[in-house]
Length: 136
Image (cartoon, rainbow, N blue to C red; front, side, top):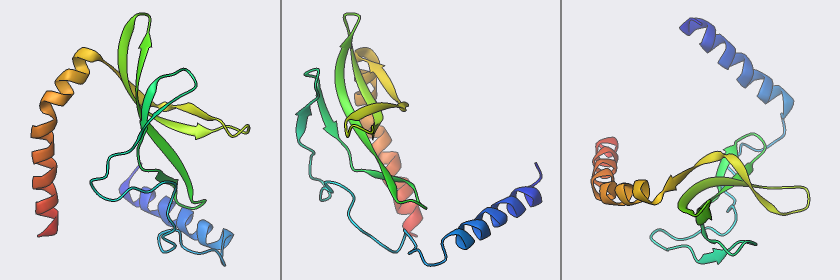
């Protein structure tokens, strides 16, 4: 599609959303805390799932701006077919109020996890450099 067509479609979507909910608050302005928000630098507490696997919950992410729905992300360590994996995955709450893994995520075998940890310092430096460039 051309750039003009994409802009026109985006504009139509925005107008439709505004028409559907004329009295609803803008989710960007209603800064209500989602879940167990942690302070900067505070490490999440380790928990265990129903299978006994260790996991850490990350901050909930607002993935549906219109509805205000959030998704929970977890980092877990699991064993599958005698191999160990580090998983970073989105979770959702099913109708029975149980947390279930979603389709979005990645499972890293230990060798790839170790490589990621070796690269973490360099990646962090790049993130900080980009954040510094944004502030200017």
